[in-house]
Image (cartoon, rainbow, N blue to C red; front, side, top):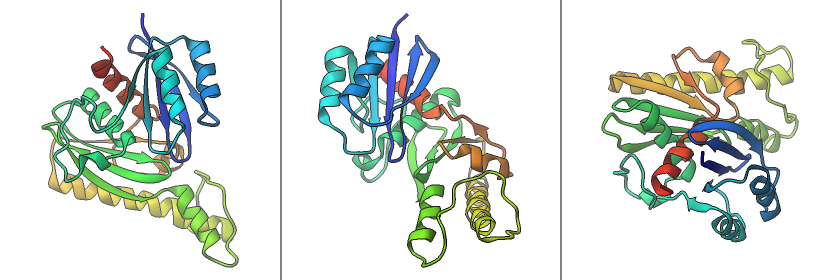
Length: 242
């Protein structure tokens, strides 16, 4: 069965997943986007196909290496996609958002899907039941909010994320966590509510590295899947690397 290597270069995290046929077998963290680290993945998993989603400036030699070693596709707005992008400037849509939209269409076709990704930024990605990616919204992610309070004040410390958050903070740390995490949860619940008021036959999909911190505090019914972007990448790879 063919092996496909799916690579995601995000602003904060760089990750990879290995699919054997259509089954996700293993995920890996890539410490740094270098040819040497990609070579190690190739030598370990021996993929026949590969796909790259990147929202950062990376060494072009990585793409050259993947092209030489595998049937390679770089995800962009010109890729063949299972949905249309009737927005003002489709070339500006992040590759990660395209992958998430592809996953939503694959697993929940003919439905209105809101995919919320909790990463460096929180992205709200809406794909309607006609498989049109209409856009959504972008707001600061958890780490960005925590760091901004440290950087733009004289005395507030940099606090590590934690899912155990009290409503009423009792010291500086818990006050910051309460305001950040519970504030984000209410933001997300509020955005979901606005979409539900406007659309029927509606799904909410939640993914991203900060899912573990936010999911326990959300009231809305969601489908949480931390590997959603990889499943979307695999689906796109199958269309573009037949």
